[in-house]
Length: 192
Ligand SMILES: Nc1nc2c(c(=O)[nH]1)N[C@H]1C(S)=C(S)[C@@H](COP(=O)(O)O)O[C@H]1N2
Ligand SMILES: [Mo]
Image 1 (tube, protein in one colour):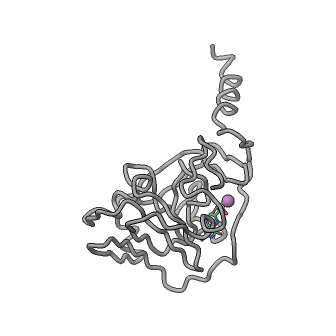
Image 2: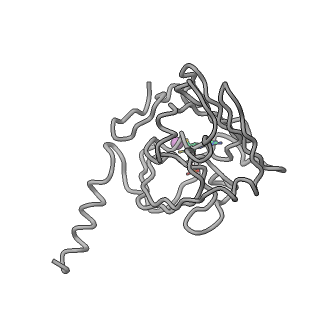
Image 3: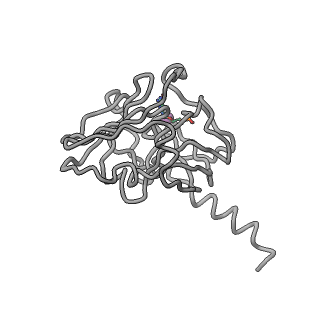
C-alpha cells in the first residue's frame, strides 16, 4: 500500500476540484481596486440589536483557530490545502443577537459582499490574519480578511472593516454586477 500513496494523493487532488475548476499552485492576486492604506485598523460586527468594535489587540486576544483547506476562485482556479489562522465568526458574533438571516461584509477601500448568516456561522468562516505561517500580505487582504472557504473566493472580503447583518439578501459589489448571490463552487453558483 505504501508504494501507492503518491498515486492515491494525486487522484484525491483531482477529485477534490469542484466542477469547472483547474489546479493552481501559485496564489494569484485578484483585486477590483488598489490595496488600501489602512491607518488604524478596527473591526465592527453589528446586528439590529447591538454592535462590537474591536481594535487589533482586541481581535488578537480572541481565541485563534488554524484552518487548512482548499480555496476556489470563480475565475476557475482552485488552490488545495491552504493554511490560515484567524478568529471564527462564531467567536466574533458571540453575545450579539439577531433575527436577520443575511449579512454584508464591507472592506477598507469600499468593496462589499453579501453572505447568508448560515454561511458565516457554525465553524464555516473566519477573519484570517495569517497565511502559510506568515502575516497575511497586504495584496491578499492583510492585515485581515474574511475567509469563507466553502464559497467562491470573491466572498472572502480582503481588508475587511465590518460585518453587518441585514433582513434581506442585498447584493454586494460583484453580486450587483451579475455574480451569484450565494456562490457555492460545488453547485457552480458562478453567475445569476
Ligand atoms: N476588498 C476586496 N476583497 C476582495 C476582492 C477585492 O477586489 N476587494 N476580490 C475578491 C475576489 S474576486 C477574489 S477571487 C479574492 C482574491 O483574493 P486574493 O487576491 O488573495 O487571491 O478576493 C476577493 N476579495
Ligand atoms: Mo474572484
